[in-house]
Amino acid sequence: MDEFLDIWSADGQPTGQTSLKGEAHRNGWFHPTVHVWFYTPAPALLLQKRSLTKETYPGFWDVSVAGHVTAGESILEGALREVKEEIGLDIQEADLTPLDIRKNTNRFDNGIIDCEFQHVFLVKLETPVSQLRIQETEVDAVQLFSFDELQICMLQKHPTYDIVPADMRYYQFVMDAVLKIL
Image 1: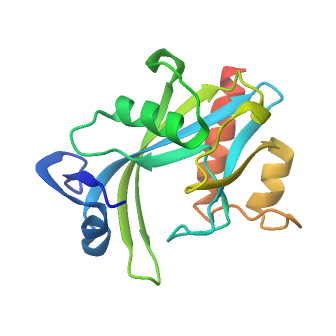
Image 2: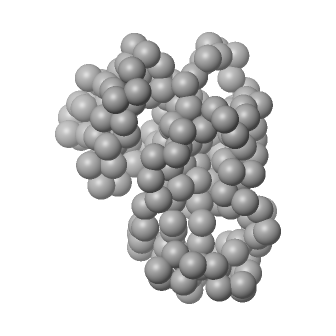
């Protein structure tokens, strides 16, 4: 489904304009997104395996929950909605620990120019992974990754798991933030 997004300026300010997501991605227009990282005290991070039908990084392991903020929706509303949609959890705003807002641009061979302001949050995972209800059109699986295992993935040396090849400092930033909380 091609949803409507609020368009932001390159310096992160709402422009008052909206467009369909596909149009924003064709034209490289900035828009807000959310990244919600779930962690456990082990310490471990919950990652999702992106559906094989995704236009970008199909089959790769990625942030616990991520998605576009729809037009007219607040960042917090978008985060809560995406968590409910992708892994079936009802969380509250108070559960979200804001970490950062990351300006990020990715260009893909399929023509997508994804220009995002990623609003990054941490949430302590209180529900067993086996009880999460994944959105099968978006997510193929979810799994906890120990920090040691994630470090191997970041080096692209894990024999089984490929993580989205983002700036690997981002993964380290999230792990460091979890360690500060624990």
